Length: 511
Image 1: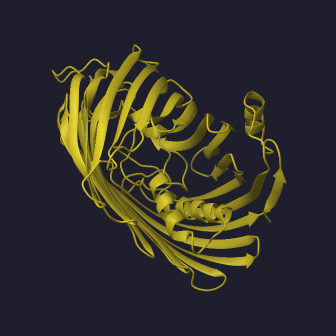
Image 2: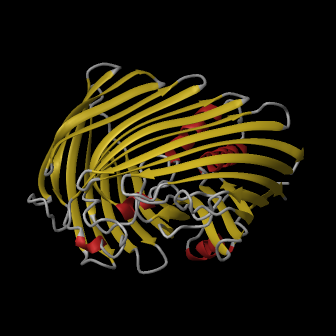
Image 3: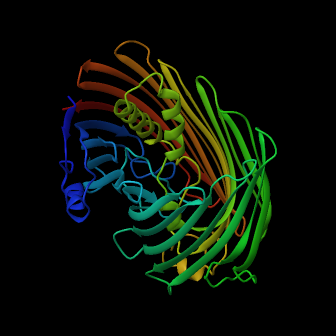
């Protein structure tokens, strides 16, 4: 049973209530949907510790997972929270528990002037891309830890008619593992200017960005970047783009190239229809020639995204990105006609993505613990298909990461991994999740995932494969039973291979 509340003021949660004391919420009625639930799951695995062949030990694992989903919608406020607590009772290991949180909020505090965005997450993450990887139904391994991220970003934005839209934004991000492994925070101030269309529709933009990052293991790093850009339309379908500026990343590079200098790019935008767009560019930065691509195609039942990017990044920055945002947006666009109610659509998207990702390898690149700066080149293709009875999300990704700073700082993070093996890595990943409503009360689910990571600086290569299938039946309006089977395989040319098979029975109750 969903609990729907329409009122003025903060939602009935301590964290958001505290936020409401610090920042006045916008006036106007806000509808709150509060949906608590409880999941009870009994699992059997033939390799609880993910041990090599001949050393596997079977185990029964009981999971108790109370959860709450909260959605707040109003004319000037949106809140989305999905929280779950997991308690694992195992015969092979000590009992453990973990938290899982995905939360975001945005508000317009002063109409047309003052806004604020906020997000937070708690999730289990792999410490290294090599070795045993996470399986949602099993307790953590020595190669995993909990990562907590928070972000808050108040900003001023206003349109000056006939001139430009100006935005001044402050952002505070934190990434913490709850121990000595990883603790990073950053403060960023950014000024954005977007010019009003001129003449035949050409526009301009400018920005200045300053960020200070403090890593518990490193000296503070200050990044500064200034840029200006133009967009000139040749026709209703084609536009040319150009940009240039100066940047200074601030870290101490070990590549022989100072992370500072001028940059430029030239490109174009093709929009043959309101449902199709392709933006591409090439240019120069201090690390060499760069390329980018962002293509979108929306059909009646299918949505496609193709992206390629090259940038300097860190693993804490990757952790701070909201997981599955792209997949969620694709499904949201497709399901608007099927599920017109935005809150119901959001809950369905959350449920589908949670199940699709619960057992397979991470969607996209495996992010891991590191204090280093990397040049990341990433290609990603994502497809979502949704009808009234079936839903499918599929993705393929390729990620190349080249370290820009010395590897010694990470030696304490990865004691079991060969020194320097993460100087350059290449990952190939593929993931597909499918759900079919076989009847009014029954659903069939299937998922498959592959994640391969190769060190180009050391002779190591690991592969991970997971295949799952499940059957769900609604026993009562607020009670669902599910049976899942799983096969997991890990192989490495450095040993530590294992295979794991599991079966689980789950009872989910909503209140």
